[in-house]
Image 1 (tube, rainbow, N blue to C red):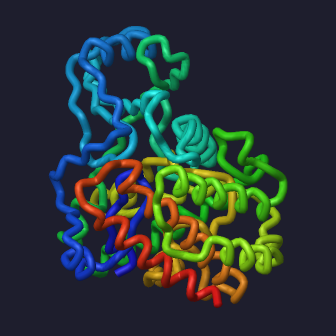
Image 2: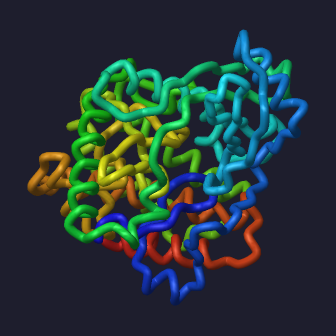
Length: 350
């Protein structure tokens, strides 16, 4: 099944089978509280101040932390007018994060607003975004709470036929996301990683991941010098990408909300970027994406598209391999898993 998956600690998606999960001891159980060095938790007093700044005529009644996320801390906040909203708070400025994670709350809010304008994509409405760092020391935003539950928490109880339709619907929605044209390629919140041509932008993104590995002393277990040589040899396949498109990049089961068999929302747009749609989850080359791609409207990728998707696997796994160092996990399971895929996909370049 296409979305038999678990998320990584910083929000990207790690797709592997339940058998691999059991083998490596990587848990994906509902109710497990995910802690992260990046979660900038707030007390009730500060959350009340946030509400007061962003809502003119209501106050906070109560709040509770939402624990399924992996990067930003999130809360469900009940207001005095009986409405419930979601609050997300970015990490503190001094928190060590990877290069591509800088200013990603800006990226998330921007992407949600872009998607919301289409009227065809189920995305939560952004109510307020405050990046002044006056109420708290980090940017934060409020968004409307959507109906339903994450597919990750309920998919084991959904009939296979209905689940297949949901995945096809996700592919259709993802296509609508990728139809949104963007001003340039790159990370929305980082002008230094933007440009008019995709190949040099992707090279800078990939280089930043390798440099983050160097700073963290992480062994990628692939010949990096040879990687650059092969990337340059493949320049022409990246030149086929001429229009920057909105890419969600994190559309895994935990970010898909479902109610009564309907997809009610796509959340967690913080990893979104302006790039090649083949970076999306549904085009990963180490898993079966048949249902997604059927809904997306693609029967098969061309050879050059397959190779670009392979490069995006390599980029993703480089980032995933850094988790244990940048998040200080108790085990090296995530690193071992990701570098295994990284080595395998790199060999596929030959």
